[in-house]
Picture 1: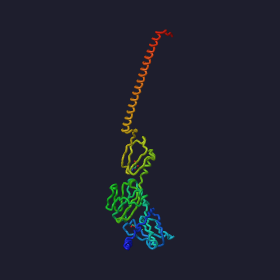
Picture 2: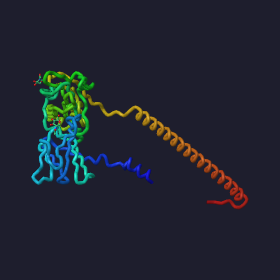
Picture 3: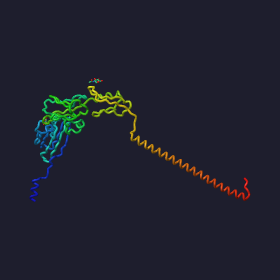
Picture 4: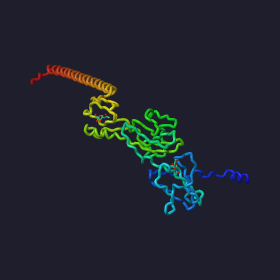
Length: 336
Ligand SMILES: *[C@@H]1O[C@H](CO)[C@@H](O)[C@H](O)[C@H]1NC(C)=O
Ligand SMILES: *[C@@H]1O[C@H](CO)[C@@H](O)[C@H](O)[C@H]1NC(C)=O
């Protein structure tokens, strides 16, 4: 029994090491409220923008010990006003009156509050003054930015200066800018610049203009609501014979990107179907021929049978007549 007790002391039952984490997403500039469970709390912050730094204390024994947060008037909430990227991270609230009462809140700040409008095909530049080199550039597509802000971005430009295949020749780094040239709709989304230590230095969203040109043309040419742009694909719906002609896609410098000649063809069945239908037709024809010949045969047979019957009947009558005559001859002849 003593050994058992010793064991229990040496290996205490596992404690709840990682309490549930609640995640919060706020827009840039909104306030973040942290509910305090008692007057005697400890609040720490793990800074996502400076992942290698130690957790900092925001509150210790119920007192605010950091310049960023404030206590609200009722003293029930810790308030972080007008959140920015620097406030992203994990907040841990420990109730010192109840050691089991630990709350973890992870905060994400939506990027797309600083937005740059760039014309289709133009250059998108992010200023780099005061950012320690080498930098990395990360990208999150618009859809992910809107819904899954906490997902890691795609590294467009690494610290070593290499870029993804789809960006090769389009990303350049100068004294004061990182630039993405020839932007298309596929580049829309949020871009993050990190410094040499991995800290977030810039977050800018790219919004590509240019679709408007496409929609401007469609009404006068009768393409209302039929012409659309999906990524780098132009789609024309419900094609009719009035749409026949040459389509030319040009970029903003009037350089022809591609030409498509649209020609309408009458509806054509596939050869296999044609062959099947032809075979079925042949089969039906053969059956018809067979049926007809059968009918003719049956008719012929019926005719022959009828003829035979007549002959037989006539023969019967003649025989009867003969007998009758013979009888008549023997007796008085019948006169009619
Ligand atoms: C988090 O780190 C970033 C980058 O180092 C810094 O600008 C920001 O002030 C830090 N946030 C807090 C609350 O200390
Ligand atoms: C491209 O062509 C259009 C019409 O033909 C013209 O209005 C526009 O100015 C041209 N743009 C450039 C950059 O040459």
